[in-house]
Length: 451
Image (cartoon, rainbow, N blue to C red; front, side):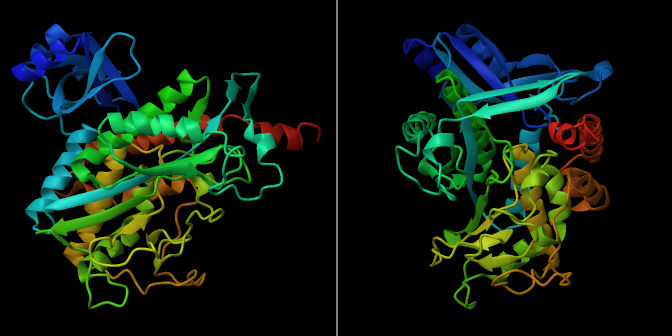
């Protein structure tokens, strides 16, 4: 600790910043002079948990946050040199971890997976799909409701029905993405590549290399933070909304997952024609079994379900397949051999709280292993409509919350997710649905105003 503080001071750092996620996954931060970093590390900083995403009621709102020095990075978006850390939340005594802290929940789940002897290393590779708009304006009050989005690609992609991997000049954000990737790698997150996605109005993708699961929640937050802030600095607006445009590709956050033990890929086996081990099949079986409940965390916005209608390569049924981009669980067709084998969970989007989503997916997979769930046969195309082995994803957030209310025991086992957090999540999201549904949409005015 002393060496870190000394080194930061010698390198001209003036301020320290602690970032922490609220229940919904929005980042918040506290900034203080570097000279107070030692106090923050040893004693923590008190804050109001009732104002931070409703962690606590106002009558017992006090919580403590301490910086995790393993997450150190220089924040590139401050004029004064500032070092950034992610924070862990504690009870007011400053030593007892706060059980509802999303970062703490993911940490407990990772310890459980290792304690079960299933894996000693868990690797996650997230894909970030998002749109970049030149301008984004929206208004919402009693007498007005609407939005306007604009991008110069409206003209450059005319006549193109599919913008996947298009090149400049039609691809207008190639340099922007390279600048963003440079900033992400400066933050210590390795990037695999970036490219233009299917959507014609500046939909793009940045994909990381495989990350340790204990780092992935922070990494997802960091990548989103850098993308949004650098875009804003360039006078642009980046959004991770799953479906910001009608009749264009939606934006997901696909997650590639591997488990390793004793330097061997737990998911790989030469006994199966698709190279999948019994552990891999059972893990996927658990995700299939709990997929509808998982959606309450992996797809927690009302907008999420405009994407999950089965169009534009988004899944609507939960089955596993090799190479099929309509599958919720996809073994990439270009992946062969034990070192590379993994599956890709294509349901989640980036409106999620990444700590809760990752924890939920791992607990579903762990339940599948514990109970030896059968994922059903590998499906080449799409399941038959009457094949009940492969559940349909919820049609909306209300259905997802209903599924969670009846299927949450796999999350609350051994107090991984506090039961109270599940209930708070459901109530918070139900209130959100009620608020959104109370407003007429601009489309409704177009359709019905003159009737």
